Image (cartoon, rainbow, N blue to C red; front, side, top):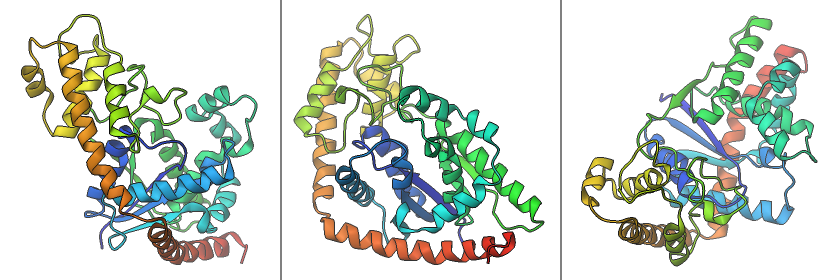
Length: 328
């Protein structure tokens, strides 16, 4: 049996190139190596106020992005978190083992609390516990993580060990992180501010290239993207703007940075951006053809089938947990 892998993504905002290279494309590769479970975490999403219809639409759109990126429902389980009630059940049980101080130390909670001062809700604080439940419910061995999620995975590991020790049974598998090797472009930055990560929740749409952006609009965003002083097409800490654009070019064309630097030697930013905008436009045109071939009914059916498969695994684990803690 292959090790089991779990990964989730929120259905909020527009998925962008950073999401594609950071998760979606990588997920399509990982499904061949692991028993893969991919979850659209809508329960996590509602810790921030959501319009119900928009949330439903985004959830389905996110599923279609998974499928357009190469997720095969014959190889992987793809489902919506709220379709499997065991996630919420296990979260409550794990809440009783989680210390308030642990939650208050979470970097992401502190960041989100600063940004959402009018809605610092309990769900926002216990967000990492629900994430732990997502992972532990499936005896997950491997979790792909970025730097911003490593603290949450560590909490899942702590809670698994704590539960196993308290009840003197090996109930939960201790998950291990799968940290993608840091390569050029493995973390795309904002087009309007290359010192910060590209974000689908950024206040300006000029921050990112959305996967559903019209190719012409995407080209315009590239031409407007922030660059640096001077005109050398070269990576470096003092040139975050052009470094980020080179990363995008590198990822889309499978060309290493050194080769690109040589190609654009003695050429200005204008010529470089023009060629990059063409590369981006062509990628989006090809990707969107795949996306548009997936109709809503087919995606919904795949999600329903995935929820059924996920529930078969989750229900067995929650029965075991409830029996051990005295709830059944």
